[in-house]
Length: 287
Ligand code: DO4
Ligand code: MG
Image: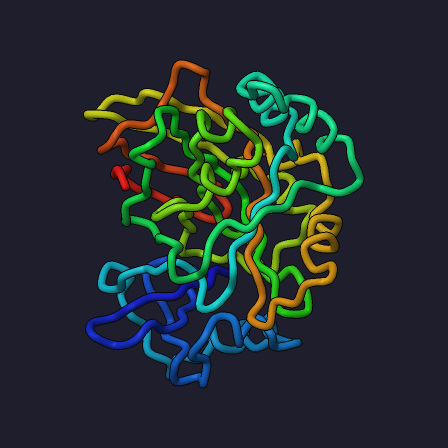
């Protein structure tokens, strides 16, 4: 099942459930569900959603008539880095003098976790993502995203883009927050797939296509099962000594890194797809 946040007309954001045929969004407002984060707190939310999908009295809105939003109400977005060998190799190569930090974190028990975005700064599909004006080497990072409730229970999966400035990151590891956190640096796919297990998600693939003036300038695919660490381990470290009263979203790291000669340009079209979830599509602007 796929959940989303959406807007319809002038109304405030609502929560929706995609119908089996993907043609309608069931508006969950009349079922008493007004916020995604609250729904994900419910113990039996999957059973409730199964009943809702059979309830013909709830309004079904044609898919084409709704505006899909990023699937966060008040959840912070965090990220984990260097979870794929490909990411480790790329960071070691780009680093002026901190290459061993990446090598060590890849093998260490404690993962590299970092704050990525406040919820209100997350952009959704169809919106613009940013490249910094003071950076020369900018890339998207296509990542599977884990959606947790406040108890750290994995409630669903979506797709994230951890936009990054590689020259700033490579110059000095202490610049990582500037390479990672700026306006329009975090995008999330509107769909949250619920009811799938970690084992199922590990069989998925993630791919990216970057278009420029109608031509593909970069494409790549990888498998989620190449993520080195179990999702439970990532969750345990994220929730250590830290509470998330509204839950949290965790980007799980990138395994697709364009070659060193590639940087994003304004106007580039980025499409990140996990077939089991959907596509996150954004156009690049300078911020
Ligand atoms: O340490 C730098 C960030 C790594 C990252 O974002 C990734 O591997 O996806
Ligand atoms: Mg990343």
